Length: 483
Image 1: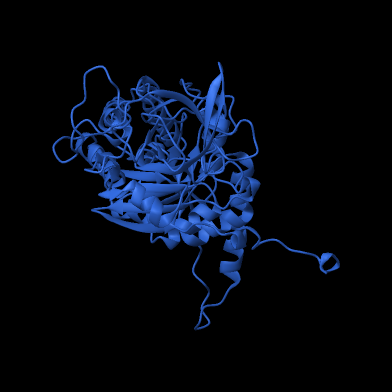
Image 2: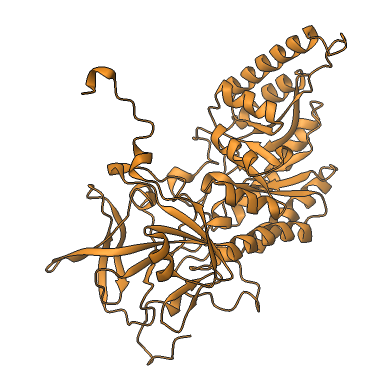
């Protein structure tokens, strides 16, 4: 570890390290700035998962996503174990893979007993290829295509129905399947068995607002997601008459990056009311999905609840409300994404050019930017960074970290506090596991970055760096334009 420095001097790395060793204390990953395994080694370099970040960049290049397996597994276990501790009924945690969908992450989630929440046919395909059991996969989206719905039905996963158009489309598909089943012949000349009903959940808009960015609010009435709660009578009446549909549960979600606890308590109580109302229409709803939304610590002033502190009151409210309504406890589901994966990953860049504008600011450029992290330009998101190859250096500069793209808004961090930097330094931006790779692009035809997973001093590629050849792989050049 680095030596002690004089009081009053801030240093680039030590202030961001996890407060205590994860082996000696129960740390909630979403309350940390760096992964749980982050350390400073004898070379004054940042280590994650026992791997020197500067060595990883030398081996795999930059920009580079570095995923700490220990932190991801810890978050999975804390969600899973907290529900087991505080909820008397059955529970199932789902990883919201829209945060970062790839084979390795889905496989790790499944290995910890989690299911996977998917938002497209591509995410569904990825989860299946990663070995996730179909009965633990739930398909979302406000505008699923007929192809995606058919894929989900044939895969055997649960479809979270978002609107009337989708509901009517599912009924049409079910009737077509039933017709084919009744008209088909078995191998011995027997009539094919009836097709099983399509397993669905209904997504309802709770009308609960919370303090977060307007783009990631989903619970208020003015949102593109979910059925209008004022139409529950019509909705439940219609679904109760559809023998081809098995309405197994109800779903709601109020948003993302939320620190408040009361909105989630309110949601839990409201969903039990819906559950009771559905029973009055003969719907045997057995599952409630309370969504996700727990926030993480992106900067020092962020103060999110721990995973356990988020889970406990939800369980208590559900149990109390069900007792009041004289209802059996439903299977309780949630679908965290950001709070599972964000803190587990950092992005390493190599510093290049700089520009001093006297009296205004200094720009320092990295070899990535909005193509590997679009959140600052999209959501005005704020991050923290360290110089990974000089972790004990005092913070002496205020600079704006700029990306390399041809866009004035391509700014990674404004007014970052750093030691004096030079070209070739390795800059690490924290908490980049959620919505960074999944929203990455090829803007300026820049290849997408590689990703490695680290644990116990070993690093393995989980996403290869794209090449220039990859960029033109889908291009088609008409014959008349060829030489």
